[in-house]
Amino acid sequence: MNVQEFYALVNKENSPSEAMTGELKMLVEKYPYFQAGLFIYLKSLYISLAIEDFTPELQRLSPFILDR
Image 1 (cartoon, rainbow, N blue to C red):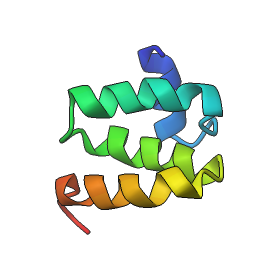
Image 2: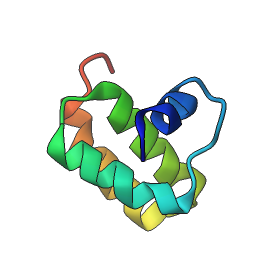
Image 3: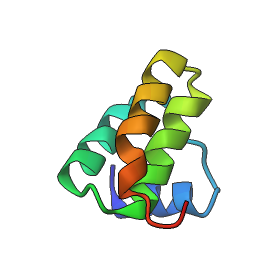
């Protein structure tokens, strides 16, 4: 994923695909306090209907979200 693809996700020009979920997960693991990355990663899990993955990831990553 390049910067332009990420900005398109942030600006809601594109929806995250299931293929991007792995790349977003690596981004979140490398930069855990990167708010935009966290939100887009969680959104990609939610959109892909991976509820068994979404709920534990939300619980694991919620302490890193500053303004809840």
